Image (cartoon, rainbow, N blue to C red; front, side, top):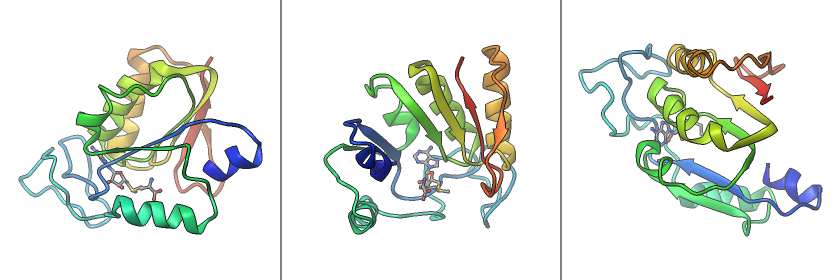
Length: 163
Ligand SMILES: C[S@@+](CC[C@H](N)C(=O)[O-])C[C@H]1O[C@@H](n2cnc3c(N)ncnc32)[C@H](O)[C@@H]1O
């Protein structure tokens, strides 16, 4: 995304929200995946260790790809803590990749309203039960009828354009 923005010669902020410590424990609406099981710690905001990548490593990788860092804004912590008080301004492209029901729900609840009319939403993990349910629940509760499209080769990712 950062490289695309740079290639287009545009100045846009890119907000990156992540724990940078990995995926937290499943909630009741999630099903086991990637070795994460229901383990009695349901919904605890404690890392499972899966997908852990430190902020420093992420920044290093981005630099290695040659993307500029000056328009990247990091929000480190659990979405439940960082997303509600965040002040991103209008969002042209909202890409959610949090895998779980609660992780997807909280982002949709607080960030979808900021997506501009004509803006795009990408849900990476629509193939995962919790993520799919959270997306369906939000779309239904907010009467979102925009057609959902699959991403070719996107391993279950979907996208739609906000009316
Ligand atoms: C499958 S990884 C994707 C990471 C990154 N988007 C990528 O493509 O490499 C899922 C990410 O969601 C983050 N995540 C999931 N639930 C979260 C939550 N409630 N708060 C903060 N981060 C969360 C994890 O830390 C993990 O980095």
